Length: 154
Length: 425
Ligand SMILES: Cc1cc2nc3c(=O)[nH]c(=O)nc-3n(C[C@H](O)[C@H](O)[C@H](O)COP(=O)(O)O)c2cc1C
Ligand code: SF4
Ligand code: FES
Image 1 (cartoon, helix red, strand yellow):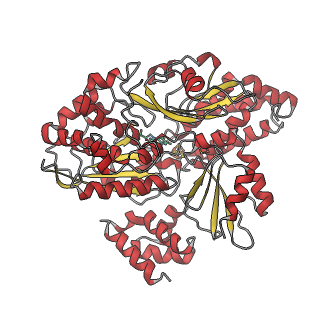
Image 2 (cartoon, rainbow over the protein chains, first blue to last red):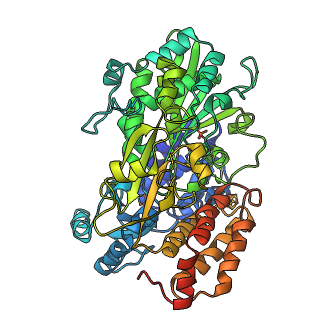
Image 3 (cartoon, each protein chain N blue to C red):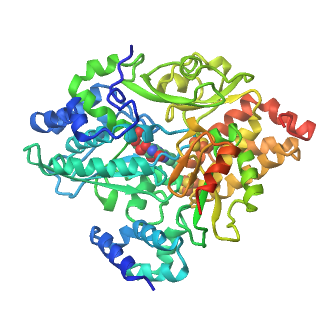
């Protein structure tokens, strides 16, 4: 069940669109902001508001890497794995995070604190290697700076 | 000193350039001038004469493209115009820097572009990861609305335009202009068949102009200073300046606004300060992940559309990635192809099935398990996934680095196969 707040925010967003279904991505992002991810149940409830079938909405949801159809931790660490970051050695960082947090890309720590995900180019290639934690971009990261960065997230 | 119309007004501290500051530096003068004193045809012609070529990768003459819109009296309404700032091409970060540094410049360029193409509604399609750019664009849009530079009867000209920001949710294919249309309509963002081209039948089946964010950022400068001035900024036949970038193991990775036609050598050696100590230049991908590798012999190639093409690659986004001598070329190609395989939208078979096959093969070669016949298999794929054999240009774009690496660095591939290991590891 969507909450009152979610419903209100969704209705407001849908009001901006002539055809409700054109707000699908915005709607999914709103629900994800409240819940961290899109469960089957929230997908069904959102689809009703968008006047789409759950299957239609899922075909949109599963298309995007930043719509999570599985539960994620309280914080998501995105590690850029494309060319400029590869050249300067993102792989070492990923190994470090693996050792430090005990999770591989795609996994979540047992305490639900972090999910680790690979991501293509963050548009910060002059500051490679680059990572993003939730909404914050970090550039020129090293093992040392990553270890300090993750301490900031409870 | 070079003239840098796109970047000169950005704040040195990297802060937000408000509408007040932007106007003090001459901002919105061009939009006022165009809407009050020019016809859409005149704007199209001026932009065409300036030889502004699209900065999204393909390099189509912008004024000429605008000339293809249906006539003003066509009853097909509303008509749309879209700034493509999806920017997910690995190695590329120019649109982000332009928007963060001067969001009003994009908005003003779009107002003029919209007026020139009789558009009623404008969208900025921005990549999800660009949080700061999104925040600044929201702020800039509300400032522009507050001053009635957007909305009804802009500058008393009788021209109306609504402008919205849309942020994506992470998929490279959304930058392809027809996939972008499906994304904006809230559908699964697979590309559409062309023709019809978006300029005839685009968003909701209505005429739609799609241009790159950097392309729009040039327009007001052409209106203010004229086509001759704009062409004089460049060192080649294409007009204007270009945002160039260099990443990789160079001393000072970064981005700069320079005359169109600046050479690779100047970019790497002067602006990026040469290679980092202990590394030598081996190769460069000149314009984002989907362009062919070039090597040392191409260092003096000017970075403009024609010259890079003649050298066997493409200017693409103009954002280059330098590969040094201590980096494995097979590994680099493997990394690039992994990106394309992951981002394939899955709509057509050669791309959906072919790219993972290529990635598996490259992985095997990289790990010393490759066989000589694998190279022929890879060669054949560069043909099977080439232009007109797949539904959109993603797969051929992926073949560009692969094909060129198989030619330029074939020995590196062979060494992996005969030595049964990666010699660079
Ligand atoms: C797979 C793919 C991804 C693309 N991504 C972008 C992009 O992120 N930004 C962009 O401006 N153009 C991108 N393009 C090119 C657009 O389809 C289109 O040609 C461009 O936006 C036109 O603008 P221009 O004429 O100003 O260059 C992409 C093309 C393909 C095939
Ligand atoms: S070439 Fe690839 S990205 Fe383009 S339509 Fe086919 S499967 Fe999709
Ligand atoms: S390749 Fe990592 S930020 Fe661009």
